[in-house]
Image 1 (cartoon, rainbow, N blue to C red):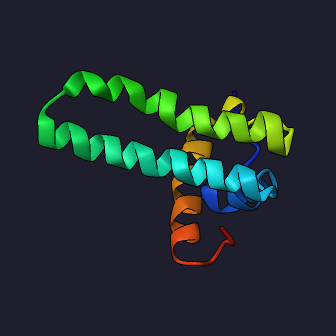
Image 2: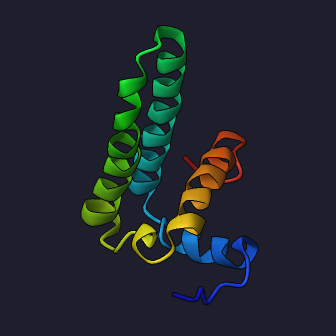
Length: 101
């Protein structure tokens, strides 16, 4: 499948347009934060099998936000790589106050 976006820079405004609902953004943020906490946990404890929970936590929170609050289809289904990058850029933008939490 060819991407209609030539770059992530071109995709990111679309990504943000799919995250206008504050609760959806918060669920994305919490899911991403829990993924980071889980990775730290794995590094500290050596319980590598716990990494299997990364997609469940990361996508679980995000998809609840999209299906129940944003009421749209997650961009992950159409643009998986740009969407994954968008999750982390939005997480950073929320942390630095560029996007309202």
